Length: 209
Image (cartoon, rainbow, N blue to C red; front, side, top):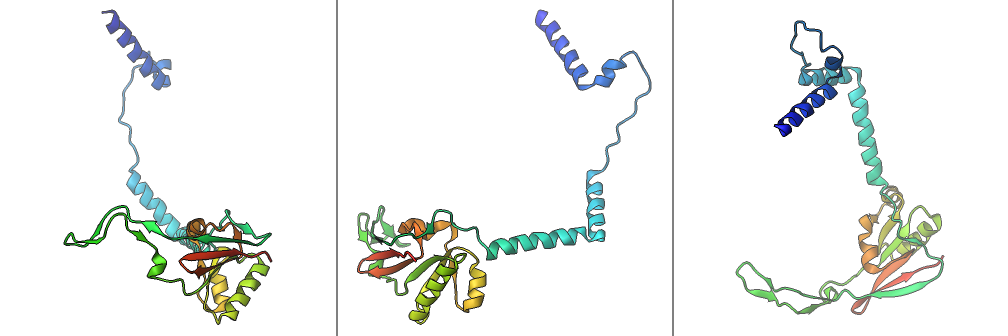
């Protein structure tokens, strides 16, 4: 019985807390009317129609398109690399060990687990990679001289700046190291940097300008 009283008291407190107007006018008894809530779907449709009619929706769409375009042609610069202050040379060995058997659709083993593979045995790096920051004019000039000295047979890869603008100026493909995928794998910390194949390894030279 005691718990029942406590429950009733708790319910009363909850109702009065949620309905302060009822608590103030509990002695007033009068007719009640159903609450008429607006049709939210109709209200939204009216708002959208008004925005379309005023041109606001089109302006918003154009603004969003411009923001997306800007991000595409001006990717966020990679903050993990800085300009090289002194020369540094390092090597990357792409050799790896197969952890599980690689089979074809019929279950035949193509590559057994434990096999050591070096991708450079099958696919060589025929064109040097040139990493640089296009926001630095000295690095841009260095990369351009390097490419011109090899008749364009090198791949320019940006870590900052607009690849789109540089591609327009140079009239040649320019790449951007999205999410630092390459510099992390190769261990590049400073730019400009040049990557070439050296036997079964890749040689990375960070150049101090």
